[in-house]
Image (tube, rainbow over all chains, first blue to last red; front, side, top):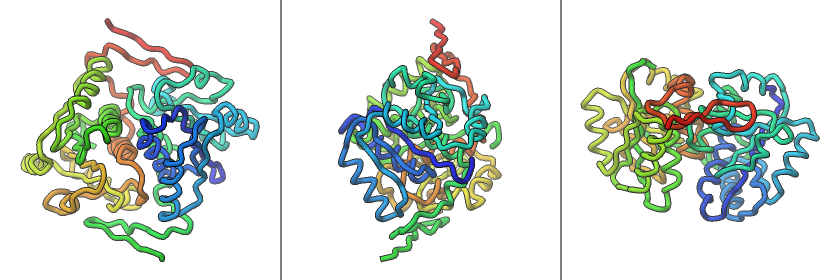
Length: 184
Length: 184
């Protein structure tokens, strides 16, 4: 993964209320695991925005959050700017048994990761919209879990030692108990 | 990771309705990412059980599901049988910057993974209950994402090529589109 490549997550199909907590988990996992930003496509949800902004305010900023733009528009613009699009799906190429991750790394480009909720539009699988269809195993499970493994492998673990700008709170890792530093 | 070691997930603090979807995601991620089973501690939730059983019936079995037993009892019995207990928490030792994962692998024992929902009891951090407190990065994010990265690293990716017993449906990984095989 080139040091300059950025990774943005596009969450498609968010349903107000029903998906509130899962979408929040996906967004926070994206932030914690090295993505540069998160786009909630097609809908607006002020509660999600508030939650992400609150975490960024306390735990450190530098994470883009956007919402409301149609997924087609985002994907088209991304590709116009020479970025690649990775669709995470249980039907795609297995990240463990294929060379798909190596191909993504070799491309050396910015990556937009499409993460669906329920059944996604068939267009997600087409070359007009996605460059790669990647499966974190070919079993049904969780977009949040899939995204986490994808980012961890893409960044080769380095994302977990990332520091965040302007953090008010920071955890000091411990064998036992909890220790935090606050910069007030 | 020794071939004979088994990993069971204990989900603590599940709240009916509110946590239904997240707990389901955690359980399905556990199954897809190589765990041998999932225990919903302290409460019973028939909807979760039905969902997991339905997935196992269609996509392949061999995954333990239990619910209702108190977490203290499960942990005590696990340790009596010489298993180790890993508590996933943002406050723990960073899996990337410490040798905690190597220590867990070196132990060569069965692993019970404690996964909380909201704030967990302080006892989770004590040596009476946990052997290791492990952080998938020290930022707040998602227990589902944390569990996924932990299992992927523990099993070194091999879990993603696992086959499941008696599967009625199986995905054939594809670059484009969806392909499934059904054994009716």
